[in-house]
Length: 78
Image (cartoon, rainbow, N blue to C red; front, side, top):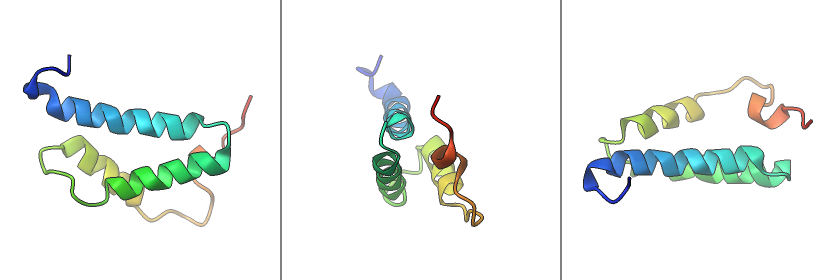
């Protein structure tokens, strides 16, 4: 699917999504949080305007949060 240049935006967005899932599923919460911070830092600047989904995700993730811990950090592990 990613062999065609027409799918470059999809491939880039898919890669970011996979990194987010890896951070969320990491068994060590501290390491998962560090992975998420690195992900957010990586999409904070230098993202081409054509990658609209990543730009939207960046705005969402960089939005000021309340003092409470974000939901993805405080989920229970069943």
